[in-house]
Image 1 (tube, rainbow over the protein chains, first blue to last red):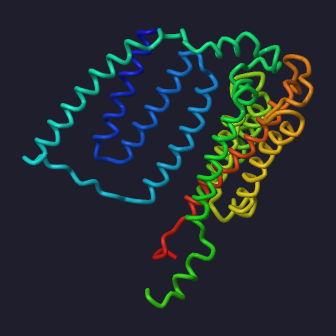
Image 2: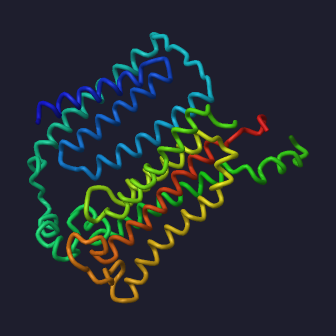
Image 3: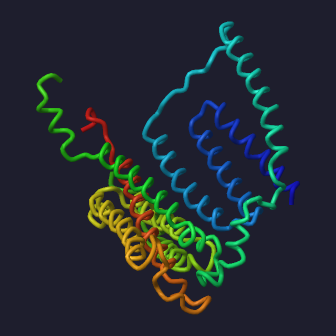
Length: 184
Length: 143
């Protein structure tokens, strides 16, 4: 299973690199979709079907939105020429990336082993979750009973974002104000 | 924009009911099987987006407009918050005040199922509203 995970992660990294570097926006969006689907298979292999379902559904919806944007707008991407001024920026980025790798490696040595969390509260949830909430799906009983306050926060974040989008992208009242503006 | 061809419209009319029923099933069985409010709500939004893509914006807005989607969004959020507040007045914030019922039954686990329903309505309506306003957005020069 570890080998399959590594293959999938390599596939996702290659897909995201192609999505950044390719010039055609349509193939870039398709690569983003491939990365998202690979991520959902990774979630499924790691034993998180809840996350996998959410990932597939949200990925399909966001892909439709991105495709729609690309069909409407026909942007031409400009190829980036390598100049001599870029040498300093690239080398500085590489140096900082190396420093980050060293510290990340040292940090990962300190982490608990895979599948052995150091928090004692998660074992408590697993031991008493079924009798406390009577829900066979332990993820839902944690999300909506033990940690429902966090879920309320997430719902508030989505609600605020959508209300902001509805307010900015509205059509009523936006045009007539601009027409009556004498400065335009 | 008056939608796509007759083939797409017919297929969408056949398929969208199954998508919405499956989304409702995932929302309602969130406490029994994988899935839940967020995943089922995203599926419901996908079904409505299919209708929007096949039939065009003017046809879809007669069934469910931006204002109606925003109303359902607010109703779902309000239902989730009122579940929390009823729990607050009977002990603690988000207290599971309903009877737990028998395991593996549909009506069980107290408030968890109803919170899932509220979140499903909220997420489905708000994702569809986001797509609807993005699809209908025009800059001032286009109008």
